[in-house]
Image 1 (cartoon, rainbow, N blue to C red):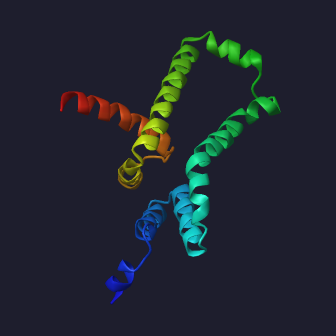
Image 2 (cartoon, one colour):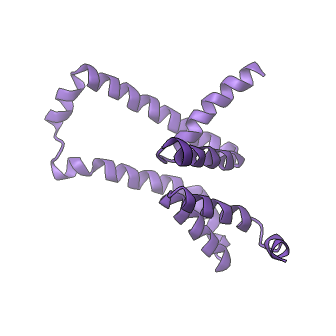
Image 3 (spheres, rainbow, N blue to C red):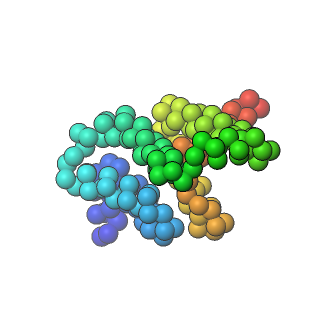
Length: 159
């Protein structure tokens, strides 16, 4: 009886419901909230906003992430002097290179998610496995997609 009820769910609800449950099981609050919000939007027939989310949510999320990262500058906890002194050290140069590589990977991730949105399920699954069994921390699907993009390019060049 329950199986019949599950098959009557509108398209997209079942995967979102499982992602919601996996997010709860792995204690990934952001994933749980995102899947929950989309489920509520479906129940409330707010699908007309999906294209807005699809087109602008990544930019909005990156804006808020950048705001959070820049708050220490606004509060004076980090000054220009701190930055210059740190950049003149080996650790500063290494972290600057790390930041540049991360930004390049994120750009590739956004491109992959835009061109091949079906990869998100596998990215979420991999992140959940890492969180649940390996002590991973969910830093976001964009970086994961960037790493996946590089791995896919290597794989596709050989096969």
